[in-house]
Image (cartoon, rainbow, N blue to C red; front, side, top):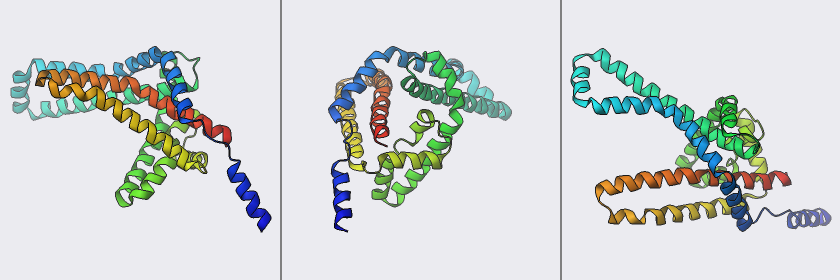
Length: 253
């Protein structure tokens, strides 16, 4: 019994440490800087899907009074207009998800060009949506009912959606199981690294948003748009950070 306990304690203390937070940030920034233009191009591919919605909004805005009177007179036209807007919005979301998957693929396969990664994203979108939906619903229910279990499993399942692309895992159950396997034994180090990057990102957004209080209403709208754009362009850094953390865990599992 004493030998077993001694062996377990020795194994615990000899457990390989994860990549340090400073190294994680430095390596993530290096990759982000190197492939920034590729990420921007990927976002442009995602925006292609928003073109139909953008055109519909412009038409509706330009002929506002005419369309309002016309739609009030003909119910069937109103129904068609709603269906068009909903379809265009779903199409834009679809393209946005594919661009998000494309960014993951650029990280996993740096040799790919943005257009190739975007085309390749089509083969992952079904599994990605299903896994994201199931994990999101389960975490929502856990947070709704019990805050602490929600936090625990948020960390355990943090890599589930990523694994769809990284390890070609197709089902929510397999993705959540594999993610938990990666995090098990490293929960606190993983949670600490996620908390660190969340605090840094919150500080960054807070500092960038400071000028809002000194702007006029029209100025605030423009500045809010620029802040949102900046937040979007820095999102790949957060994905790289998660991917680098995954790689550090995968080396040990």
